[in-house]
Image (cartoon, rainbow, N blue to C red; front, top):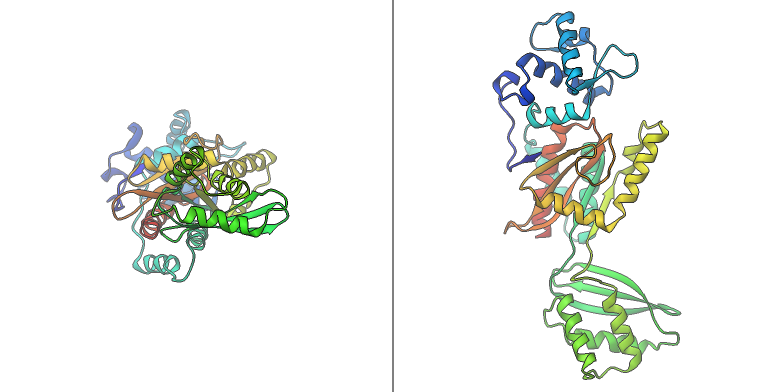
Length: 362
């Protein structure tokens, strides 16, 4: 599902909007009420309960007939022997696409989000982590924040000795972003070789990206124009090699994973969430998340295995791109939670937080 910014709520009830999936107003009202009860309680809803909740007067018998039709259409199912119904993932998709009603965040909520993320004196990593914590807390799900790989100019590179055979490579971007990598160094390497390697690279930065610097240094060494001794040269090569590809890898911050384990008792469900955690640690997952965000100008909602990312049912993901003032995507963020997450609440939260983070990353 794609929602163009800014988000605005649909007006009126089911009869006032274009009904999805060929549903009539009565069927749409019953499906929507069952989904809303599922989001609120997680329990199946029966016809007698619906007769009291629906905005239109229908007898329990009429409601049961409609529920049977919705079940035959694959939108509802009866868990075990319960007389009540729960929405299927297909039913949830239909609800999200055409029946969901949501509003904008209140002004005090916007101010709270902006204040929490705009605290001065905090590193970029801490700010992104706070955004993940914020999303998790506001959604009661796991918060995701993805900062894409950086290909901007490099300001400074430094090699710090860590002890026998190891050194830390510190890379500072022109925008102040700091990244660290540990490299292996030749045994007996003197500290002067690390300093020489750092001086060599810093003298050649001149506002270059890491990819440009790597190519320039490789050409200089291949042409034997380098003034480095062999030990310092090996440090330079190892240091540049820690950032593979055309730029540094991105970072995916996940907060609130424990929320996905709340009230989970089935072994199959636990195994599914464990696979999700493993996928979230995969760099390919970061790239795919960014691709999903890039395909939209606004919030996207994936129910079950729709994203093709986690290959699992029972979970939903709400994700949005973070864009800077020029409209360039500089990251992505969202939440992952059970299919009964509060979509109406989470969509505007993700939407607004993405805009705040976009301004910060930009």
